[in-house]
Length: 235
Figure 1 (cartoon, helix red, strand yellow):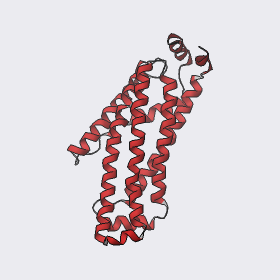
Figure 2 (figure 1 turned 90 degrees about the vertical axis):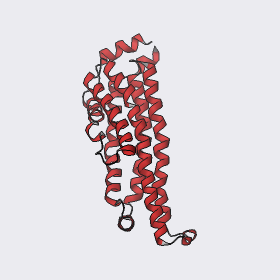
Figure 3 (figure 1 turned 135 degrees about the vertical axis):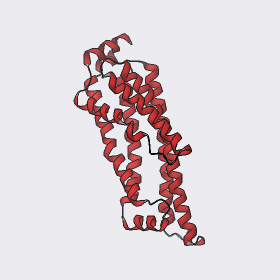
């Protein structure tokens, strides 16, 4: 009981909101850098873009790695906030998200491999320019595949989290419903990538719950009275 009394749900909610929103500029920076530097099917322009962009490309890699560190902190804070609703669902939420972190971080090695191929070390002299260009584009394509593997878990973690939010009486149910929709958006998007690559990404229309939740937590917080009632029941 002592542990529960020490938790300030309003503060925990606002910390979660801040951490969630921190990911927005970091994620946007990584996507913006990648989309502006990498030209699908055009290795010459892509390589020229990377070489002339200075630190932009390596910084985008660091940004992607930093997002995952923030993600670990975020899911642990959300666990503390949502555990009173249903501990098993909260554990499942953490498991799904933690699994995605090493996959996503290791996937950045594909982009780092591009930097290694461009650094001009002696052992690379065995490859001609066409071979190097082909390998660079291969690693970029492999990175894109890795993103959609991670996307499966980015979707799966939203299902238990959405259910927790929906079942809670301290966060609006509509946000929980939107998170559940976001789950299926990610899952369908990953399947779309492998089976229907010409279709426009689905997650572009289903991510609103992930935007609304942190804004609500940061500026509205939670219904402390309802949170305390649930916390007492799970004591």
